[in-house]
Image (cartoon, rainbow, N blue to C red; front, side):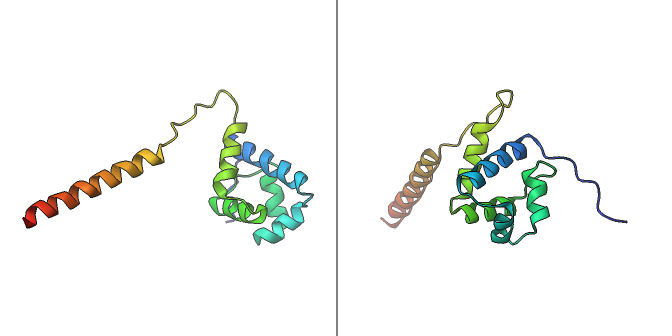
Length: 117
């Protein structure tokens, strides 16, 4: 039966592949070396870098490891490279979310203290 035909890379994947190609050039690293570091074949990596197919989340993790950077950095740069017609998502305020957790935790602890009295 064979594999289903894979569509070409989407907008975000194309932006990410530009970042990866630039990073390869900046590091004087070949696609073959990147493939080796990712544990993938060169044709596998080439298909993604040449926008023939999308990256997987595992690919992102492996590329980041090969470049010795955090995966989120690849995503941040790809987001910056996205065309202007792409609507950006609201960036979560993680510090605010953490403060809400702390406040909730503190109020639960205060309730326990008042129950003991």
